[in-house]
Length: 297
Image (cartoon, rainbow, N blue to C red; front, side):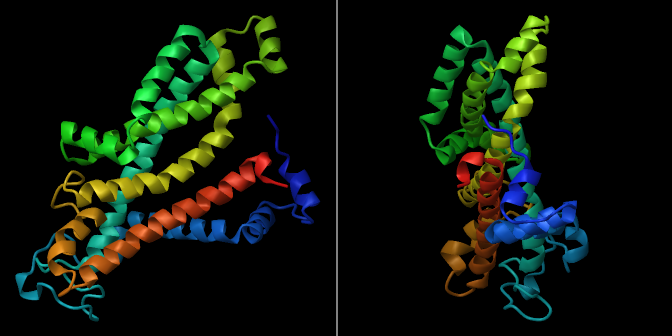
């Protein structure tokens, strides 16, 4: 285990950054791709928050007279087969994708932290049971298990979040468990036991905070996967149901029938999905390099 003193690290790297913004600027210069990923994700978050102000039309309004209209000044990204504005649907679709991505990552991460911390700290038969359950869950790929869960629960926003969160639990729990096993042997844990501190308090107050760095890195890396999984589920018809705009469902409705006659119905949702996943992965990689001391030479 290693503690990171960012002031020392910055001085070693040749930066004389004393203020908070100067540190951020220096790290952005050192990790240009990570900064680009952060900018992309910030744009998507702001877009989702202010979707009602940015969107020019109601994403659910049907106008058959303007069905399959080409991109123009009136409709920047054209319209779909029902005459709905594609730009407005993509803007509001950012809310769905980020809600599913952040919600499933937070839910799966929280349960995974509880399972991993309990398994690693208590060890014994508790660890054995949790690890065998994790082995069963990890035997299936993320998308396959999410498909099974969604088919069993039914297509809806809460069910999609739950279905994607469950496959994330074993991944998070194993990372937390590995760090907990190393931390529980550290002298500060023995010192806490010697003064009569309860096991629960030691685990929550001393062990858990020292596992947050790898957890943050893992959660950021998983965010892109959850967004892509939601799009895949919606593309297959098991994700977010109509009439809610979802990037994956927009592709599903357009790819087979209109890819030649109205390619904008495929291009723009595909770009939105790619940028969201690309931004999350870039930011996650940079965050790993910053928070993990083993990544630095």
